[in-house]
Length: 419
Image 1 (cartoon, rainbow, N blue to C red):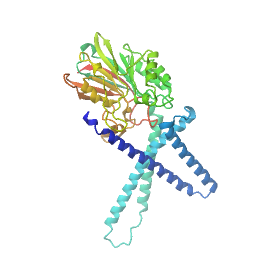
Image 2: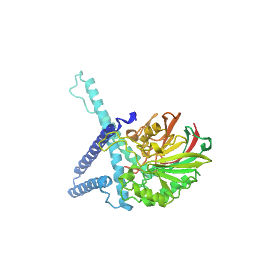
Image 3: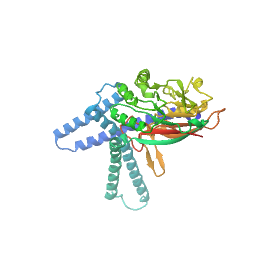
Image 4: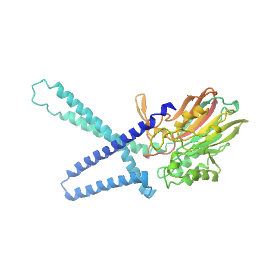
């Protein structure tokens, strides 16, 4: 558990910094808007513009408060479209603000260097270079526009660009009969304004086309209170696999207070949600142990590290392979210590946004976990030998902003292989 020990305080500090930058970003663009409005010589036009600006600010505050606390605004239709615009604006303005400020800092640094270089010369003052000023003004405009264009593209195109991702997973101590077992894995559905039922249906059809032997869904069926949970479960019940459809709860089921309701709906529609329990499954005369847990918090409300996968030791089998469904990939540390050969998780959305510069990539999920997306390994605890694996699904839905950039929503086809 060591690599996580100081993670939560750092995450809280970074979150506070991001919120502060969000505030300054909005202040920056509001002041720019006021400057533009003041240039108008038409008093009536100025009053109208001020009214529109302040109405937009109030609407932004209401949308943020509703998303975080209230959950009272109407859902669907045109209103959801305006909510999407607000969320996209918050994202785009944040990165536009950072980009513009970097351009300003670079410009200021060049001016300082120029002043130092000319300090020993007899000129009484340094003249303004109109070309340099025009260049940096154009650069700031371009850098400010890029996040807005990217946000619109991520909303209109990449958000529903579902992709298959096929991965062979080496599993320690896997019997010969289970070699080649295929698992179709979905996660982070987030049905609601920005994930309609018809898109879930499309993902389910994709999953069924794989002819997988086992289907699993690792949590976050909804985002918040009022989301149509039963509609989501109804669509997921169309999944077909000989070994059945299994799932676990995510953190958003906690926020929406529907953990028990989700379990009941799974049963109603012929599926099973595992909550701190397990099931023995058989394929080609070989057995494996499927374990499922509710969302595992890796910190307490005070920000202190919290133990994970408590009281599931009796569920872990030593005689057959174990597969764990746990929404939070950070439970993988403890899973490996318990001797669980394979964990399936979600939660991160693959960061939802990934920026690649040369051969390096950056994702906001790095602030949450080292297990952002894809396949990872840790040593299995003795007496077992070999490696424990976790596969982190990039999810279908979105959270925060209704867009994806560089991170495709995925339907995972995982094939178990003997290590």
